[in-house]
Length: 168
Image 1 (cartoon, rainbow, N blue to C red):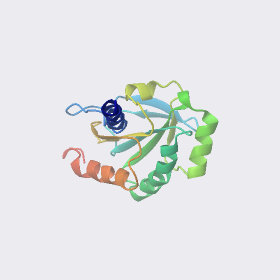
Image 2 (tube, rainbow, N blue to C red):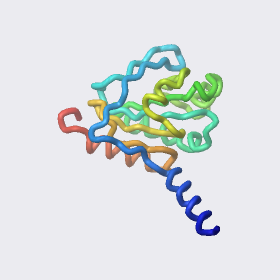
Image 3 (tube, one colour):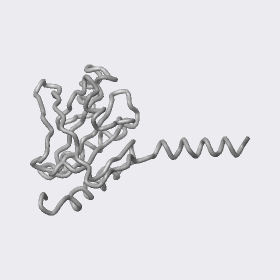
């Protein structure tokens, strides 16, 4: 019985930290969402710079841990990488999203996924989930969950160093 419990716990642990498998040169789907000010954003490659697309919710504890790092990185990499925060508004509230963005000082675009379509297109299974996408729209890396301080920056640096030579 103990072996079965250990096996099940091991399986749960592995699934909790599972990174979605990426096909060779996967392309990010095109999405069109409004931000908190009502301005429409069409994210369609090619982009003018690489993007970091962070899916989150105001009720998410790990999202709260990650938020200050996103703010710091948006300032540090301004002009090199564009950060977008996509609130899972279909599973959250607009009021919660507004308060979260205000409380954490988000200065980058906060997009509202009111229907859940963007999360579905990106196959978001947990929050936070962050996609690192080069200028050509290729998903270079995916981070499911909050990996601790510094991991987002490592992934941004990898994105900048390993984007396609013709697009960086």
